[in-house]
Structures are given as structure tokens and as C-alpha cells.
Image (cartoon, rainbow, N blue to C red):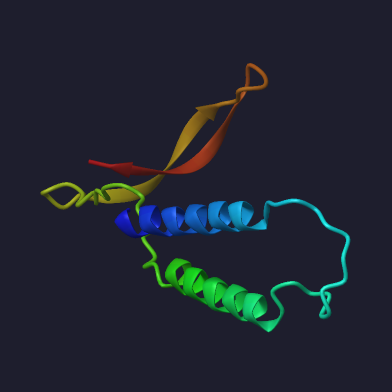
Length: 104
């Protein structure tokens, strides 16, 4: 939780700093290079992206599904057998014979 908060603050600081640094008066002049910050800006962007990306990717994976309860079954052994029983039909008034499991 703390790592996620720190990563969020780093991203917020990077975005806010980038937006404040980029604001200024617009001038249509040729500065000689045409790219402003040049290779320094590209390098700073790559290093910042690598740092933020590694901070986000280095988080552990948590799979939280809540507590798991296991049914241990009855404390005594069940004696079950298969037997034929007459079962009423749900769709008409008739009945049929099915093989069902009967446990005591």
C-alpha cells in the first residue's frame, strides 16, 4: 500500500513538474537546434520513465480472495448405497424410477 502511494506521488510530481516547466511565453524563433532541450530532455525522460516503470513493476502480486474454509466432512463414516426409487416428474403427474444414492 505504501509503495503504491509513493509511486502515485512520484508520477504526480513528474506530471506536475513537467507541466510547470513547459509553460512560458510562446515565441516563434529558430533557436539553432529546433528541439529545445535536445538530448538532455530525452535522456531525462528515459531515466524518469525507467525509474517509475521499475517502481511500478517491482510490486509483489497479492491474490486476496478472503478466508478459505474446508469442509472436513462428518466425524463418523457414512454408509451409502445405491438403490432404485420412484421419483415424481416435475413436468406432469407421472413418476419414474431413478437410481439414487442413499446414505445413513
